[in-house]
Image (cartoon, rainbow over all chains, first blue to last red; front, side, top):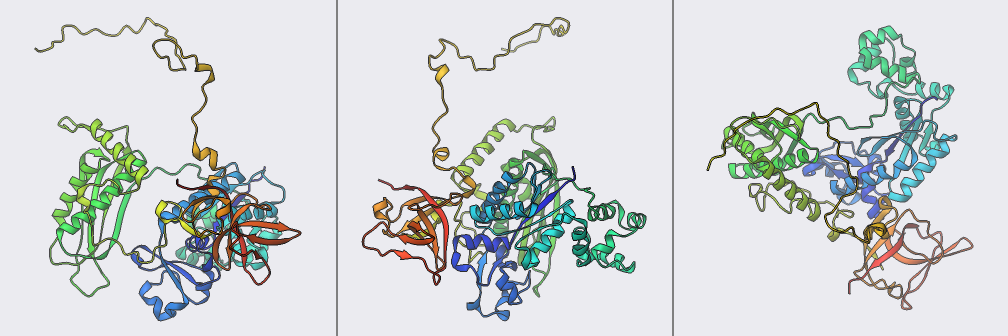
Length: 421
Length: 143
């Protein structure tokens, strides 16, 4: 049976999440800011129409649009993560297999599932909107690349009403002829330049390109893209997440850090978070890197440095990782600079049940595992950060700014949406 | 007192000794007369929430639904996956605001009715932007 994939993509996802709980935002220009309220990472259609570009630094916003004409929100990842889980859970009823591609996109395997694909797509769209309040667009095609293309058409063509199914070859031709080659999934700027030199500027021309030339110049990845455009499925659904190769936790500070004590707090916080991620995925890290840097956009003395430490025994124990991380920071921290950012990177990851100890290792690892388990259990049940190591500081003043974060409507009892009775 | 190893034996790999594997936990002592009748524990989540991905908790402020047992400050369980029907209690969006009322719908006409004689009903017409947000399935009222 010929394969069929659907790509379901949420529209302006972060903004849509805010609108579910604040319906008064419908139809208004709304933007959401990145970590530390730095730059714009989501815009409603109305904000796009005002000419606000993606990635605009927040401080430039008021030069573009009067403050009263636009609603600005800090990112509320607790909310977005939960809403994403709800959307994905809702989608599982529509296909036997699903690949969660990102926080707001999923591929569904629709092979043999429905006769009238457009009607099925409409049903999926309606159900997600009804159950979660999140609007989506759906593209359906015989390959993932064509499903992505169909999804793009669904987003931009008003007549499509949010669903496009590319199932017949004449439909493919029309869609591909109208698509510039750089919009094809997997074709980036340098590939675009290369193709242009051979007069290939549309997706249709790419589909008709010579196999051998493509293989020579764009490799097997390029050939897969061309075959996918031809309707030959080369990219299966990734049903299991790829095992992690590294864990990074790194953030900019809400305000610059100048003293070692505060840098200790920040790095301890990031290390704790990184250790939590390791334990959640049942991994151990064998190598730890800490790094710090000043703000390169400011006209002030610049310094950035990093140090990598190999752990004698791979670990995911917060106390142990803290010792190494703080020791690393002591080695690279220099007085007299305004630090903007620091981070922790854990590499050499291996499964937690395969720890290679050494002859002089005296640490009671079984006991520390039980301690970490208890710590994680308390934090899961009573809220993140309920139990913390003292090194992270009691009232850190460098914490990220999120002045305009909406309430965590779905994950915090004290922040539920209020309805008028 | 030190313990010394006197002799080390190699295992005999040629003799097999079968043992039965019990799939049920076997407790010492008498079997429980309740064994054949054991049921699962009562789970409030399972009882109250039919569509977890579509269920939200909301807080109420105001007393227009007091006759339905919904007091100001109460917690509501709202299921967005349920089809609203005549006389169901719903959370609705009226001109951008979330409100909880009883839904009356007949012959294509819709009216939002409070469960409190002191408040007026709201018939829905074209000038009002109206949308059902979800159906209220339960209310928690602390005593």
